[in-house]
Length: 147
Length: 141
Picture (cartoon, rainbow over the protein chains, first blue to last red):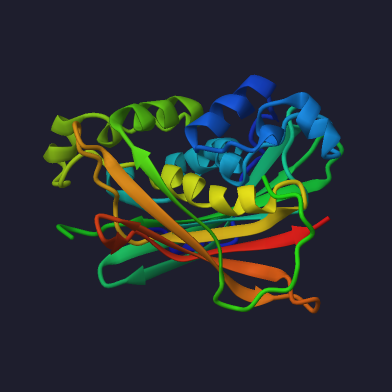
């Protein structure tokens, strides 16, 4: 993997409009049963504008930025050898339906360890007003040789 | 759903626990919801061809369901401000038997009022830990 990736920031991914039905669909898929994820009235009663996305929903928004990284011509990342090593989300506020989110990825570290390479990237997600909503951080492990 | 005020707790006490049974249907549902259509999560032949012991649950599905007992315990009293995990071992989902993921959420640190601040998850399948350093930081409203 190309160590000169560190510090590289990619162009913002196209805006992602969070749909109410997408939030419900994702919530069912991760066994999220709190009514604020499904019912607008419950979400409003709790002080939100619309249904609230579960904590890992940001991965859906982040995905387009990871695709940019994997497709970067000089990155040297063999997609077929990539394993998800670590994941984290740091929220300024929960994502709600109606948010228009834009994610921008920056590579923060590239390491080599025992024949494997590890790349860590942060995708900063902002809303339509440019306010920070969440940062999604992924560490991808690229297995070397026959490992 | 909890609505009672959050009171002081001891570090190490269990705030929530839950077993979630996954089937292949669960994986297909998550693939559609998340957009992750890697065939190792629904095709035995592809999983075998890359040397896996079977079809695996998406790591992000395991991560996503593991935080739910904490979210339910929190209810509308607060929200998750940080959540991070390491993917240490895959969850193999048998075509007939499925797989059961067990989650135990314990208080890791407390705030100045003694309320949970960081909650640590122990996430297991088939008797082995599948997520490492699974930590949820919560804030109260």
